[in-house]
Image (cartoon, rainbow, N blue to C red; front, side):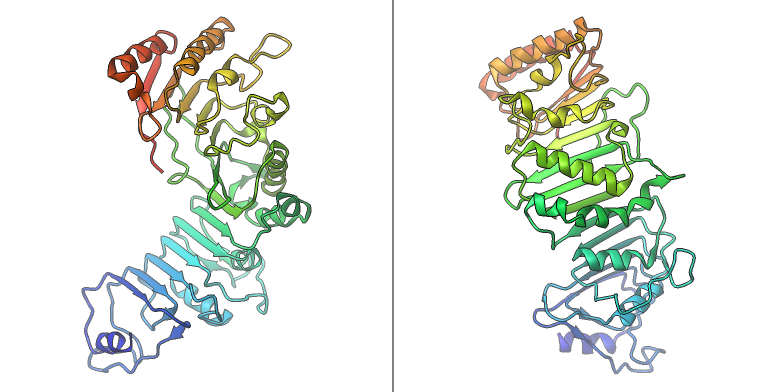
Amino acid sequence: MDEIIRAMTHASLELLEELSLSQLGPPTSFSLETDPAVSPVRGMLKAPNLRSLCLCNMTIPVGLSGLTSLVLRDYSYLEPVQDADTFLNMLRLCIHLENLDIDNWIPDLIVLHRPQRDERGLISFPSLAHLKLRHYMERINLLWSFLFIPKSAAIAIHFIDFDEDPANLLESGELALALRAFASHTLVNGRSTITRLSVLLDPDSSKLNFAFDTSRDPPGSTSPLWLPSQSFVLKFTFHAEITHADEYKGLFNCICSGLSLRLDQIETLEYDLADCDPGLSEANPNDKKLYVMFPSVTTLHMRCTDSDPAFILRALSPFGQPRFFPKLQALQLRWGFNPSRSQSLLDALKSRVAQRRPLASIGFDDGNHWSWTIVGSEGITTYLQEVEAIVPHTYTYTYRE
């Protein structure tokens, strides 16, 4: 790495637009002895057109004012790459950033005075579109207290230090406190603007993702394709061993408290709980809590391959109305072919028509979860035609993260 840095200091990098440097071992801050004939600023690389900079386990003096993308990663898990003052001063120079990604790099900022929201000490990123932070909850929240960014920016937060026991996570109040710091990003006149929620559980890593968006499906939309990985205003990731519906219910209530959100505001809901299906099994009627918490949902994305969508559609309340998602208009299924389940779905769709609550659209994922080859293409075509006779807009799609 020393030889690479030395070569760069003696070169004119006027055409350089993207730079990515990474080294193994302890974090290192490289100082430069630049040639005055090459760089007019002593100790600074001359790269006037640099727009994208990615540094891993190291820093290097380079002009920052023209950057639109900055990625900082520290995988050494040793001492911080920078102290608090140096880190914040560096960010203050990045006045044109559109993308900021900080992974395990945030130093302990508790030693510094935290500015009020109207103080000049705030670091402003007026053009920021994407902010991604991964570190301990306390360090992320301290950094957030120094930042001022547009409400249009998408914020992705990964807390790496939460206890995996959901009971500890909720009883300690840590999660609600962590979320509360970000509530202002989605509030207008004190009210939450969130209308979309995605819940994703990775069973291999016990990683739980909550994504929130403030957009609405256009009136009359028949094939809404919300991709939470690409369109969100807030996303939180942490590790939690979830095994019961009550734990999910507790998490939802905690999120509502932290973000000043009401679950009856949610109009678009995505459940992507892999095959774990906690709380979404039809075997136990008491496990339906996750279906009844969202009475205003009009668009439902079911990515739980073990769940029976027919059960959701045909279940009735004591008053003869749909028990779950009474306002549902659009349904998307990441669902493989099962002859008996497919017939029950047809029956359930007909029951919605009889209840005068018909669906306007239904989509089937034709990607990895299509096991429809069992019946062949003719069988698929016939089945989709049967569905289309009940639901005006029936379509297939390929789900992509």
